[in-house]
Image (cartoon, rainbow, N blue to C red; front, top):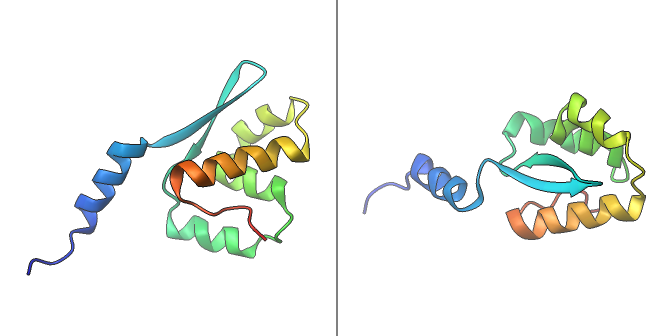
Length: 96
């Protein structure tokens, strides 16, 4: 039996999902990665469960996060974004 090819599996996931998962706020588009590098996962693990700002800044990058902060987004908006993101990508970020 051939070995599991990680690169091929990754390529299939990225082909199916794309490199980013996009969402829109007030007509402006923002992106989250569809794959989270292990280094970022370690940084995510260091965040408190309720640190939505830290989570988004880490996933989006500081510049995109600051653009998002210029909009009036509620905690419920962020929760809805993260829920949809998790459903579409299979990543369970922001769960307590």
